[in-house]
Length: 148
Image 1 (tube, rainbow, N blue to C red):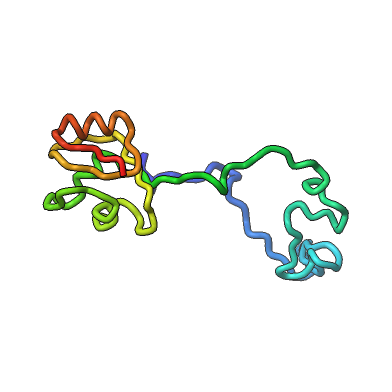
Image 2: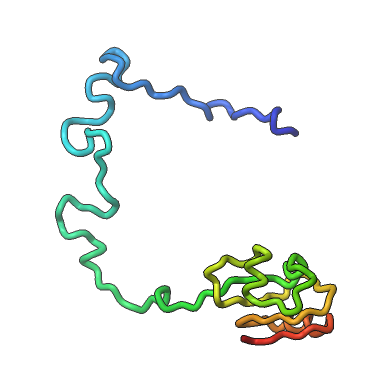
């Protein structure tokens, strides 16, 4: 089977609904938009949860619990296999070296190194956190994992 030989199932493709082309087509006059008002206008839409001015359900119900999203600590993630992309002349791989190699975005200050992939050369890696497998692989290759 090839992409060019695929075809739709019978009944999957419909004709486009042509609105506003006269009463005989069945979609004339109001063009399937009902009567007058906000929803009949172009660009007129009501936001999700709006109940016509009545107090919406999401405001009636009590909000309980705590959400840690605003206070979370987020790390830029780099895998051991990606460290091969860093220039070999760099003695110590830190955040600046990872940004230069394009592995981490510029604003990232916290970097966590994970153990996916293999490391062939001995390098000093300076990061905020290391997974246990990443630390083991760096030290096995003769390198050093420095928590900064």
